[in-house]
Length: 403
Image (cartoon, rainbow, N blue to C red; front, side, top):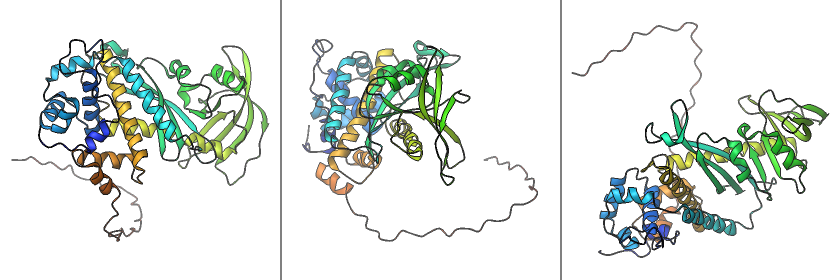
């Protein structure tokens, strides 16, 4: 297969899986070439390189001797890849996900959390649409068909955020139905948006022994009874800090929490409740802002991986592809921790794509290379604001026809 770099970036990344030579005793019993391990490796590589179509994956394998050597396959038909997606056992992918999370936690065992808040855990979900006909099995309402990733994101320190639990569902499953599988007693503070408002859960978490810590945004027009007001500085973005009582209508019981009301820089008002009494109101507001990390994670996997493009739309194959996307994101995070670069995960991934067949040491040198330019470049001169015209001039429509 030609000269093969044994320490290439591609090999280094895919060997993090330690799965390329795996044979499933059930699904691979009659497989001559395309095993479960080889299939997962091919699709993880496709995620790294954003290969969105099966023909691209096949052509890359045919021309990539490094990949051929790793999975011991030189060519495969795209229909075989498509069928194999339906045969990969989810249990193996769940195990891979768990092992990668465990390794990340071990590497960050000494992390103290975000600032003085401790470890934070935003919980949220993102939706991925499916085609009108092929996605009919995930029908929700009207023309909406799709699946959801419910994610528990662990923020162990600034710049290190990764999912440590996921629940996959169709889009019709509410966030409240999935939250019980995502929230467990742990030394962390959970952060919830309005989709997770369930006063029965909040009451249970607040009153249980070894109370589960949370910060959750209230829905608009939520009724509560103020028990006591706390002092608030006039120079603070905090407009209210109070102890309140809320009624859980389902059980008919009340529970006590702390309510913090604050404004963001755009003047939007937020009301959050929490059972953390050890922090200032400003700290509680800052913790809720950290919920944005999970939105950034969803944006990252959709923009920089091939998450939103499914090769096979059968239910089992869709779950498999969701797991492969999350596993790829975890591998990126693990490699980022290993090389300890000041570059962002995205910049690292972008360079990995170009250096995929190059030697690992060359990639590390390029990643950590100091910029050659000392100048910041030509700076923009701020323009003076022109006075707004009192009346708007009506413009004629521009009509152009190419000859």
